[in-house]
Length: 412
Ligand code: ASP
Ligand code: MG
Image (tube, rainbow, N blue to C red):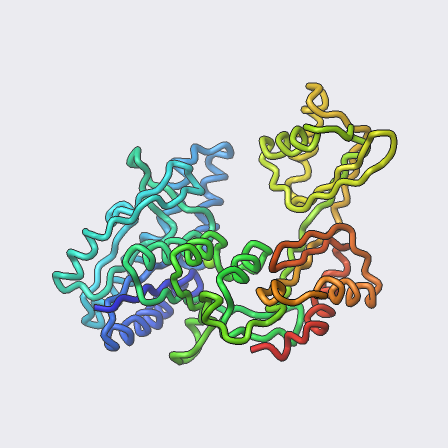
C-alpha cells in the first residue's frame, strides 16, 4: 500500500470540530487508496499552558518531568483523532511515542530522534489498520523516560516517520496556505510559492520563517522526503500549498526566492582585543560554553595590534553573553577594553538557490537598501543567502524594498 504522512498542527486540531475537519481529509486519502500515518500536535495554546504550569510549579524544573508534562497535550489529540476516525468507520488507533517506539537521545526538552522501528506499526497495518495516529513531539529515551523534541517538534516527528516508512509524501497542515516570498503581514505583495528547494526552505526556516521547525527541513533534505505545506482550512485541492522538494524538481529556479527577517537581534562589540592567534577561539569558545548562539561575526583592525570583535546574537541572550565574557576576562582568558551593545537591530536576508549561478545579487541588495537610506551594520553571506544587520526601525521598509527590487511579487 502506498503510504502518506499527514501532520496537523495545533490550530488544525484546536477544537473537536476542527479535528473532524482534519479527519475528513484523512478519510479522503484513505479512500484514494493510501495507508496513512497522522501526526498530531497538541490543541493550539495547550503546550504553552503546560509549559506555564511547569514553570510556576518549579522554576528550576527537572527536565524529565517537564517532558512528562508538556508531552501530554499530544496524547489527547492523538486519542481524539483516532476516535473521530473510528466514528467514520475508518480502522484507526493512536500511538504515543513510546509505543512505536520513537527512540530519542536523552537531551530532555530538545531530544534528537535516533530510530523509529517500523515493525510494530507495520504489523498493525497488515492486520487492517488504515490510519496510525501518532502523538507528535514526543519519544522515549534509552533510560525509558519520555522526551520531547523542542518546540515545534511535531514537524520533525512527521518528517522522521515519512523517512522511516518510505512515505510517498509528508503533508504538513497548518494555518497558512503555504510558504510565502516574505511575511504577508509586512508586505502585501508577498506571494505564495508553488515550490521551494529544501536548501532554500532550510535557510528561510532558520532565518525566522516559522512555518516549519528547522530540524524537520534538515531531515527532509537528508532523506529527500517531499514535503507539502498547506492549510487545513481551505477547500480540498490536490495541488494546494507549497511543495518543498529537491532543487532538480524546480525547472526555473528564482535568483531570489524569499526575504526573511529576524526582529530581535543584538550587535555586541568587544572593543580592543589582542590581535593574535587563539583570541577568537577563546572569545567564541567562552560564548558557546555560556550558551550564546552567535550568528554573525566581524573583526576590524583597530590599532597597535588590537582589534574590535563584533558579533550578533538574539537580544534575549545579551545578558548571558555579557556575563560569559566578563567572567572570562576576570579569569584572564580574554582581554578587552570595553563591551558595546546595540540592542536595536534586526536581520534581513535574501535567499535563493539561483544566487549560485548569478552574480550581482549582493550589489543589488545593498543598492536597494542605500536608496532607502538604510545603513548596513554587518553583512554575512553563504552560497544561497545574504544577510544584513540593520536598525530595527527599518525592518519593514527593508523587507518591502528588497521584495520590490527582486520582483518577488512576480514569483510563483
Ligand atoms: N505542541 C508542541 C509545541 O507547541 C509541538 C508542536 O506543535 O510541534 O511546540
Ligand atoms: Mg508548528
